[in-house]
Length: 500
Image (tube, rainbow, N blue to C red; front, side, top):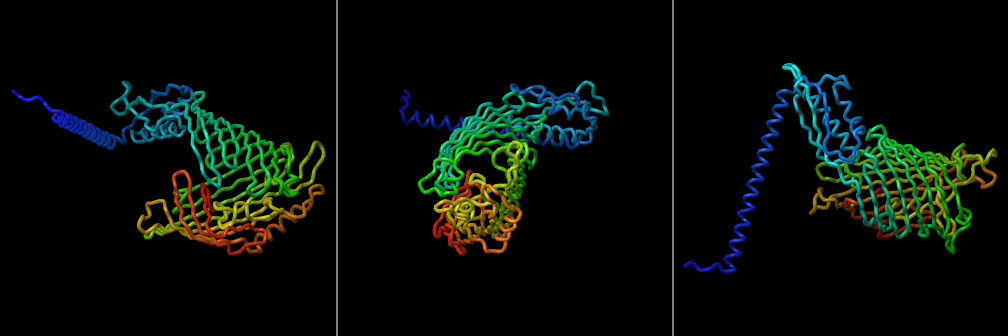
C-alpha cells in the first residue's frame, strides 16, 4: 500500500505544477507572438505588392468614442473621404492619409495611443478599382484625472493638487484646476478652460482665472497678492493673449525701503501679450545638441487697455548646445536680455506722461538657476535691504559638461565648469509726476549695459538631470562684483527647469 504524501511532498508537487503551468503560458504566449509577427509580415507584403492599386475611401466609422461628439469626429475624418477631398488614392497613399487622421486624433489627448485601422472591400469595388470601408477603433482616456504631489525648484518647495476634466463637451475640451501652497508662494489657485478651434489640435483657445499670494521677503520686504483673468490663443510656436490682473503690494517688513513703500497698495495691469518659442534641443534639462529661441512681449495700459500702469516690455532668450561625439563632452551657451519701456497713458480724457515702473513689473537677476555665484535677485539696483529690480538687463553664460568616467555618457550626471555674468540697471531721469525723456533714459541704460563690465562669476560642480527637474551643486567664485551686488562665494545649490 502506498504511503500518504507528506507536507514536503505536497510542496514539491505544487512548485512543479506551478512551474509547468508557467512554462505552458510562456509557450502559448510565444506562439501567439510568432503568429502575430507572421501576420504582420504577410500584411506588409500584401500592402507592398498592391501599393499602387487604385482605391477610394467611401466610408469611415469610429468605434469606442462614447463621450465624443459625432460632429467633432466627422470634422476630423471627413477630409479623408474621397467624396469630400476629391483625391485619387492608391492603397499606399490611402493608408498614409488614414495614419495622418489617427495622428490628429492622438494630438487631442483624449484617446489612448493605440488606434486600430481595419479595411474592408465594399461590394461597389471593380476589378480595376477598390472601394474601401474603414473602421477605426479607439479607447478614450479617463475623463477625470486627479494628481497630487510636491515640487522643489527655484529655492522653493510646493505641495499641490491638480484636477483635470477631459472632453468636457465631447469636443476635446479640457477644464483644469489646481491649488498649491509653498514656502514662498503661500497659496495659489487657478482654473482654466481650453478647447481646440475648429477641431484643429494645432490651434488652442484658453480662458481662465487665478489668484495667488507670494512672499518676496527673501529679496525685498513685501508680499504680493494677485487676482486676475486671462484669455489666449495658441498655434504652433505662437501665443497671443490678453490679461487683466489686480496686484497688491502688502505685508511690508520693518526694513522696507521708501521705494517699496511708495509702490505699496493696489495697482491694476491690463495688457496684451505675444510670445514665440522654438525649442530644437534634444533635452531641455541637459541639452547635448540643438538650440532654443524664446521671445515674449507685453503692451500694458495704452489707449483702451486702461489700468494704472503703462509700458512696453520685451524679453529675449537663446541657447545652443553641441556635443563632441567621441568623448561625450558637451558645450552649452545662452544669452538673455530684457527691456521695460515706460509709456504715456490716458486717465479718462486726460493724458498722463510716462512714469517710472513699479516693483511688480521690473526684472530681477541673479541666483543659482540664473547668474550663478550671486544670491537670488542679488544683482541690480538696491534700496537699503531691498532688491528693487531694474528696467533693462543682459545676462549670458557658457558651460562645459563632462560625463563621469565610471558612469558613462548614458547617465544624466555630469561634471560642469561654467562662467556666467549679467548686468541689471534701472532707467534714470523719469519723474513719478513730471515724466521725463524716456528715450534718453533708455539710451543711457543701453550704454551702461554695453560699455561696462557685467558682474561675472565662474565655478565648477555636479549636474543631475532628473526627469522632473535639474539639480546643480556648484562651487562658485565671483570675479567681477559691484558694491551693490550680493555675491555668493562657495557652495551654491540650485533646482529648477531653466538654467542660464
